[in-house]
Amino acid sequence: MIGVKAENLVGISTGSNSVIFSGAPNPPTPAPVTLNYQFEIFIPLATWKDTLTKLDAVAKNLPAGVSNLQYNSRLSASAKVIEQGRQTVLPDLLAEARKNADALALAAGFKVGAIQGLSETHFSSGNQVTITISVRFAKI
Image (tube, rainbow, N blue to C red; front, side, top):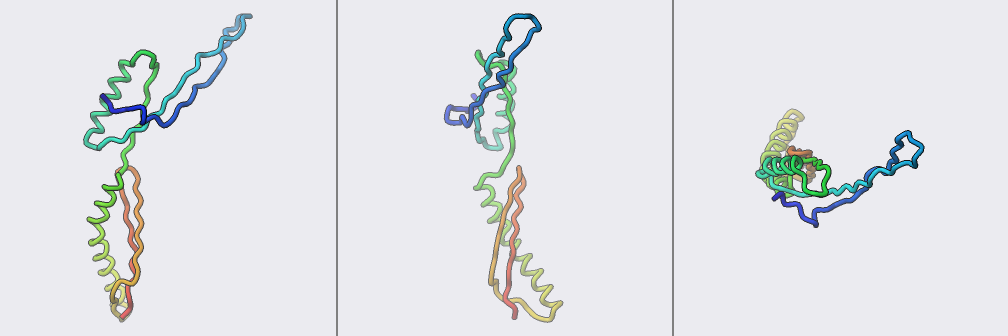
């Protein structure tokens, strides 16, 4: 239904083992032990909303033995999407770097030649990817 399998299990923890005092002289009653299971699944963006709807439906009608269902979701770009974006914008970034270098060189009274060095970084946060390049041109 949702696509959660045993191999998606990434953690198990226990809830607090608190003791409940009723105020009576009887010995304290230990609270039941709670087991928390943490699963991690990766889904395509196209099915994200449908998957959340399914999780909400399960939370409203919990299976036997399950007392609570909580989930967190986040969007992040896959390596494939980042690489596709990089390949798309890199020519424009290089053209812009050349244009800016030409303008600065002209103002300083010289020209720039071939690229001598290039460094690139990318950072992704959620559904946003920032790609930065630094270009070093030869002085003519």
